[in-house]
Length: 337
Image 1 (cartoon, rainbow, N blue to C red):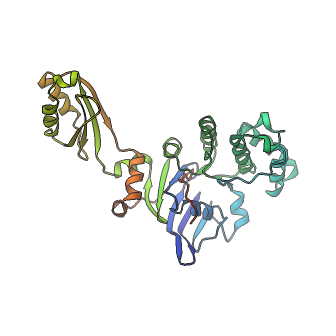
Image 2 (cartoon, rainbow, N blue to C red; image 1 turned 180 degrees about the horizontal axis):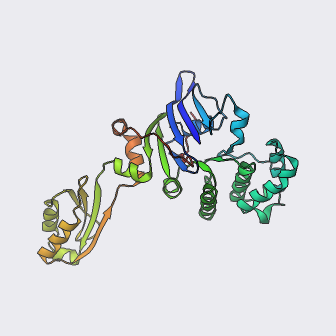
Image 3 (cartoon, rainbow, N blue to C red; image 1 turned 180 degrees about the vertical axis):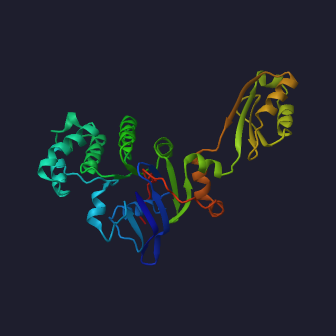
């Protein structure tokens, strides 16, 4: 559905985005992550046609976004981070105005507005003045405007920024529903949103694409250690020091650290090792009561921090397979350089 090839954007001597390529399949959700200033928003603006690339090409369903912009943009809906609304208009009036800007046929406008209002749960406020709406409802109005013309691709840049927890939950549910009907590209700085909503993830850092894959693939690719939290009843019967030494001697166990209460430890486990059975056997053989044995796997947050804080780790990350799938481009918000 979307293909970006060799996207590069320069501002004088500064290169904000360098040779970024990816593709997004019909009906998928893609998340784009990166620290502030990484080039995420610049990439989003290039794939929506709001910013021409210095080099590279974007196609939407085979249409070149810059050589055939009118037809390409008909298939695209875009919600920027700071959505521009006319606050003195009522919701219905604003959506009618946007329908005219989209050159929709007059006979189709009313039905399209009704569909967008229903999809974005705006029925109770459709006759209300926009300036009187909460930020969450204003985001919904922006979403309704973005889907008004029935685009096949929807690009959302930080759709939950500035919302309270209840509003975030509501917008996430709305995004999930919208993603069932169209390709979605989502930009966010909230990592749980990526894990909850996205089929695939891109991580951009210093203007380059440094990792690509499903959240699970990226976690497995990180090759980081896992951790075990272990605790014994009554602090191991006063034998805490001896227990720590015996835990450290188990196969696959690296460092052992005592935690906040007697008999409770954190074990660093080597990559591709599982020390849980050995810990259990140690407890049985020592006559100890095992109260806790919890494993913490590498998370997407661990992967993100590792790749964006350690350039060497990003450099040796396996090259991503060609992306046949994409939907919502989830990007962590970047500050403009």
